Amino acid sequence: MSEQTGERVLQSVGVDVAKHEVVVGERDDRGRVRTRTLANGRSALEAYMAALAQSGFTGPVVVESTGFWHWPTVFAAQAAGVDAHLINPLMPAKHRKGDVRLCKTDPADAALLAHMGVTEPNLPKPCRLSRTQVRLRQLLNLQKQLERLIQSQQAVLRAHREAAELAGVAPAAALTELQAQLTGLRQQRHSVQAEIQRCAETMAEPQRVTAVAGLPGVSTALARVLTGLLDPAAPSANSWVAFVGLDVSVHRSGQKVGRSRLTKRGHSFMRKRLFQAAWGAMIHSPVVRRYYERLRQLGRSYVEALLIIARKLVRGAYALVQNPEQPVDEQRLFAVKT
Image 1 (cartoon, rainbow, N blue to C red):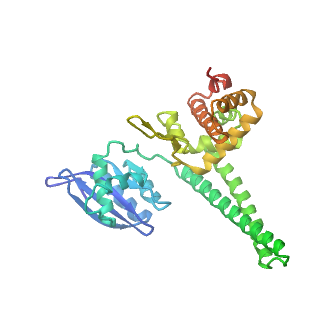
Image 2: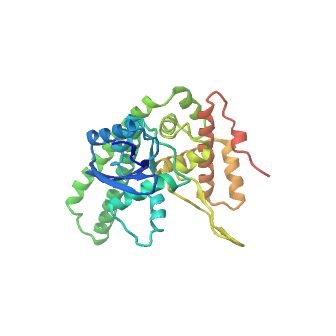
Image 3: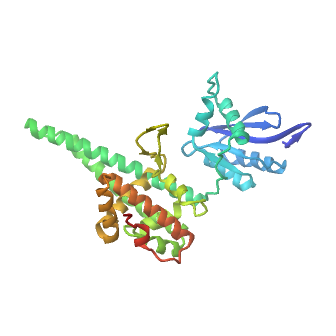
């Protein structure tokens, strides 16, 4: 495969990923796209990316994030020295709406991603995540799913026991088995939490962990995960805030000002942990408590106030990761404006 065949110069590559195969769309300098199908496996993808690099290709490889199935493509591109841009599925969905034919096939999606490599002005920077970082993300996702299962099982047990008590009948025998399953899920959650900490310890720099753990409400365990999960090379603290879904969507048009809401587009597990950290900071830090009370006086609800504090903690963590030697200045971070 060569980047230039006759007058054809390859500009961008789009990769539509499924569990067992990927469809690759190659856009040339005339806007034409040629597609091909590859197995979604290391050998096929590494061979393709290596050939792409050897051809002299320097353009973007645009990959849509699809659960876990996109990582072989991303890692193959990294190994070959090709820039792989991992994008949120919302981005191609926006472009797809502009197609009057509303075509939705794997080759069409690959072609769309290839076009985005040339036309999309807000293409994210190339993905540089290591396998350890990806493993940490998968462990956090597994813990989130376990917590949902535990909450669901608890609700089922509680509802059936209350129903049996109200009716004056014996609870179903199956509830005993459900209780045993619930105990097993809790043990699995504990094991995953321990594995998360071991994984985070291998990634985090001790100086950064110590600095971030100095923030009110932030434990050493949370500091390890924060510094291991979030990208220290992010251009600003806003990127960290958006990654955990604590950024706010604004709705304004002319004289109309709509209600602002959390986007909740980011990492829901970390958002929950940061909310808990904000609550702990409000309880144990007089400075944060005074800031919280001021927010309440200004009409903020309990949840709104804690989310604002959580956002402050993320911004503080970003600053400390950039310069771990600086002290934590709670008075400045949680300054009460009069």
